[in-house]
Amino acid sequence: MNEEVMEQQSILIVDDDDAFRDRVARAFDKRGYDVRVACNGANAIEAAGQDSPELALVDLRMPGEWGLHTVRGLHQIDENTKIVVLTAYGSIATALEAMRLGAVGYLQKPATVDEIELAFRRPDMNPDESAGAPAEVPSLARAQWEHINRVLTECDGNIRKAARLLGLHRRTLQRKLAKFPVSR
Image 1 (cartoon, helix red, strand yellow):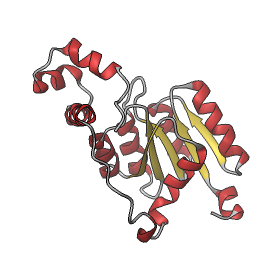
Image 2 (image 1 turned 120 degrees about the vertical axis):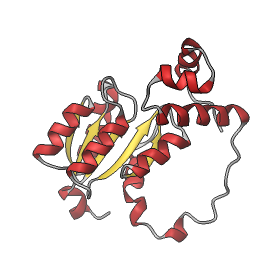
Image 3 (image 1 turned 45 degrees about the horizontal axis):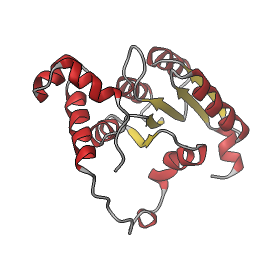
C-alpha cells in the first residue's frame, strides 16, 4: 500500500484486552491510519453505524457478543469493510465461518502488525503469490481441537449444546477449551 492510501484508511480495532488493543492501535496510528477502537462487539457495531471503517480487526472471543456476530454486524452495515478476525483460539471451523460471514482474513494471536496489514491486503494479491506453499498435515491433537471448535461454532458458542453433541461432560469441554490450541 502506498502512503497516500494508508493515510486515508480508517481501521476499527475490536478487542476486550485493553493492553493489546491499545498497542495495536498505536502501531496502526504510527503507520498513518485513522484508528478507532472498541472493547466489545456492541460498541463496534455502534461505532461502525455512525461512520463505517474501511478496515476492522475483530477478536473472536470477547465477553458478551461473540466475534463472529460482530463480523456479521459489521458486514451488514457496510459490505465493503475489510474484516480480519484475530484469535488465540484458532480453528478451521471458525476461520471458515468468519470467511462465510464476510471476513477477508483470519489470524492467530500473537500476530504482528505487518501480518495484520498483509491479511487486509491478501484479497487484492495475485493468486500466484500464495501458490506453492506446502500444505501442513495437522497432528491428531490439532484435528481434535479443530473438530471441537467446528461443533462449538455450529452451536453458536453454546458450550452445553456442543458438549452434548460431542458426547462430553460440559466441564470436560470447558477444560479442553481453556487450554491453548495445540500446535500443528
